[in-house]
Image 1 (tube, helix red, strand yellow):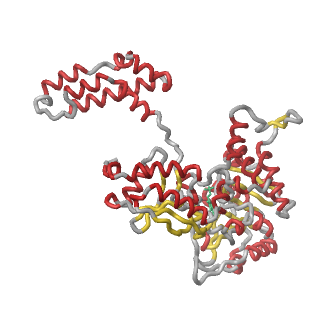
Image 2 (spheres, protein in one colour):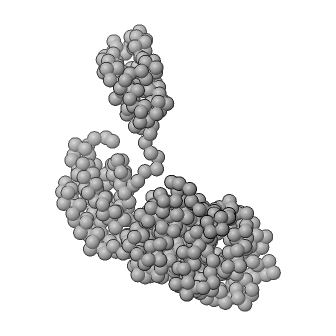
Image 3 (spheres, helix red, strand yellow):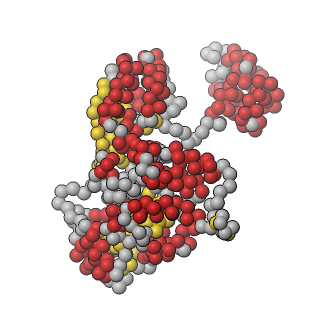
Length: 482
Ligand SMILES: *Cc1c(COP(=O)(O)O)cnc(C)c1O
């Protein structure tokens, strides 16, 4: 490898000549065997890449004759490694120990098993997605989750509410504004002109919908009289946007929903609320009081409410639009509804999730289960994990798990975390190593320690975590540049 003579140009050309052709490598039985799992073309891609690599190494002088001998003795090993890299999944499971329950960057809500069961049942074959099996006619896909949502609404004292499902909450807001307010004005408080992560901005959505934004009040204070003064013959809608990811504290004022509803009634204007999180049950039972549910808004008299399916609802990515049947009917016939429609997997997953609500088996919805996990239970698991990694100077520390994800601003539930002090390699480096594990682990750093909040970790993953941490613990591994 380091012989100056070997790396001289004349011998390089000798090395180049010793490189086998792609076909020669592909004909080796050990290499051909790789194609049975990964496909012949994938193996060919890998072989080409391996040979290109070797050629580059020879050219740069980092591969000498002895090195090439080693490679050519068993080319299949290098090819197999290439095949593994080529066929690695892009979207992979991750263990979320970072202390945020609804984390958009980590896919928001983990799905209930029942949701996956419904996907497997309905999506691996055909389904009655748009077939009325009784009449043998074309049916409507939006009927599917609809009847379950109707039952939930009725249980919450709402007999006259219709619900439709679109791709996500951003789509829901876009569709509702486009149908209910295109060409007219929508009145919004300046304190609610929010941006939700991933560039969902109310003013931008408004512009795309063809509705005109009429801002009223100030960032911290808006009164119902501000809305009233702004109403003209062009006004189509009064819009309330849930402050999903921020709080305004101090000298603040925001009209009660009931005041807006009353104003809307008096002036013949629908009130729409972009609720964001979309809890379907009273979240006080889950440790986050004052997070309004979809039904509370509707009971307060809001005409149309939109929310996400994968925030506090705990289901698949979706946007729910619930409200007055006459308005929902209009949204249903808007061309955007077709463009923003969801597929069979979404309906299947939504039904699987809603079944948990209807059966009141809330622990089958991972998001709700995680919220309700007693802190001492989390502490106990942290303690068990601590025992496996003494060299990382583990300590079980009280912390709070953030609800997160544009759901409940600043809201959190008490929890415990395992704090690790990695010593020489540093917290950043340990966090990076955790992310590089076969199943990556997302942690959080506080005061130069790595914190693992187990509230959001499936207990079945604790054993993996213990093994993985024990592997990282030894200095040999920690000292190795990864
Ligand atoms: C999260 C959120 C959105 C965006 O919802 P998506 O489902 O991500 O499209 C819009 N408005 C509010 C208030 C939100 O909290």
